[in-house]
Amino acid sequence: MKKNAIYKYIQNMRMLRIVLSLLILADGGLIISPIISTYDFHLYSQHLGFVDWLQSLGLVKLLDIPRFAIGVVLIILAIPVYLGLRIGWLFSCFMLFIIMLINLVLARENALTGTFSLIVLIIAIANWKAFNRHSLSGAGFVAFMSLSVLLGYSVFGTLYLGEQFQPHVTDISSAFYFALVCMTTVGFGDIIPISVEARLFTISIVILGITIFTTSIVYFLGVFAKSTQEIVKKRLFRMKNHYIIVGASPLALNTYHGLRKRDLDVMVLCHEEQKKNYPDNAQVIATEKINKHTLNSANLGQAKALFILGSSDSENTISMLAAKEIVGGNIKSVIAVNDDKNYENMQLLHADLLISLSSLGSEVLIKMIFGENINNQVMENIIFSNNILDS
Image 1 (cartoon, helix red, strand yellow):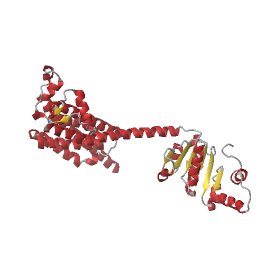
Image 2 (tube, rainbow, N blue to C red):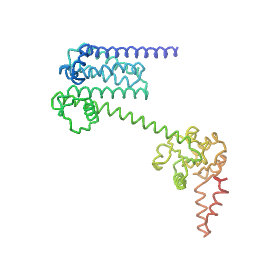
Image 3 (cartoon, rainbow, N blue to C red):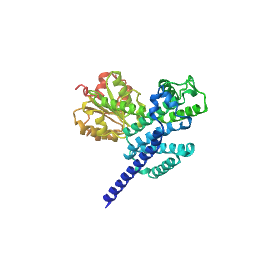
Image 4 (cartoon, rainbow, N blue to C red):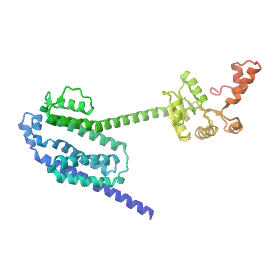
C-alpha cells in the first residue's frame, strides 16, 4: 500500500513537470512567433549589411530584442524543467517574471502574452516541491545558455542603438567589445552612450552582467576547482612508498616535519578542524572519522609505514584495527599511547612500535637526574629493539 502511494506521488510529480515544461515551451513560442512574423528578414539583402537592417527596425520595437532573447531561453529551459532540475525551475521563474513585467508594464500591446506568462509563473511557484533535483551538468547547461543569451542581447542591442553611442558602433566586433566591457562592469569609457535609450540599455547590461555573468563565471570556476580536486585525489591515490600519519597531535606534527625534512612523501589523515594545524602545502585528507574508506583513500596498501599518533587512545585503536583489516601485518606501524593505563590493552594490537611519551619522558628524566649519559644508543635501547622501518 505504501509502495503504491509512493509510486503515485512520483507519477504525479512527473506529470506536473511535463505539463509545466509544455506551458513554458508554449509561452516561449507565443513570445517569439509574433516577433519573427513582424520583421521582413528579406530586407537584409536589400541593405548595405546586417547592421543597417537591424537599425531599420524602428525605435518602438526596441523591446523586441530582450523579448526575443527571453522567449528563446524559455524554450531551452523547458528541458531542465521537464527533468525536474531546481536550477532550471529557478531560472524559468526569473525569466517569466521579467517577460511578465515587459509585456504588462512596458509593452502593453502584448498584455495577453504577459497574462499567460503570469499564470505559468504562478503555477511554477506553487509547485516548487516538484523540482528537487540538483545536477552539476544541468546547472552548467543553464549557466552557459544564460551567458550566451545575455551576450547576444548585449551585442545585438548595441548594434541596434549604434548611432546613439559616441563613437558610433557600426560593426559586430565593436559591439562585442562594448558588451563584454559592460557585462564585466569594467567601464573603460572609450564608448559612451549619449541618448536616454542607450543609457538605459547600458544599465540593463550592467545589472544583468552582475547577476548572470558573475554567477556563471563563479559556477565555471567552481567546476574547474572541483576538477582540480579530483585530479589531486587521483594523484594521492596513486602515491606509493609514502608515509601515512593519522592525527594532529604535537607528536604527529613533529613527525610530519621530520619526514618532510628528509624529502619523504607524507599523507595525513585528521579531522576537519585539525587540518589548519598542518602547513598549507601538506597532503591532508580531512574526515569526520578514520575508517577503512579514509585509509584506502590514502592508498594504505602501497604505503611504507603507518604512524597513528592521535591524541585519543580510543580513536588510535579504531584506526589501527581498520588498518589491520586492510593490510593485515603487511605494513610497518607505529601507534602512540596517551594514557599508560591503556598500554597493556593496546599491546594486543600488535603494532611494530608502541610508544608512550610519558614513559619515554620519565626514563630520560631519571637518567638526567642521576647523571647517566644519554646518547643515540641509549635512546635506541629505550625506544627501539631495532629499526622497524628498515627491517
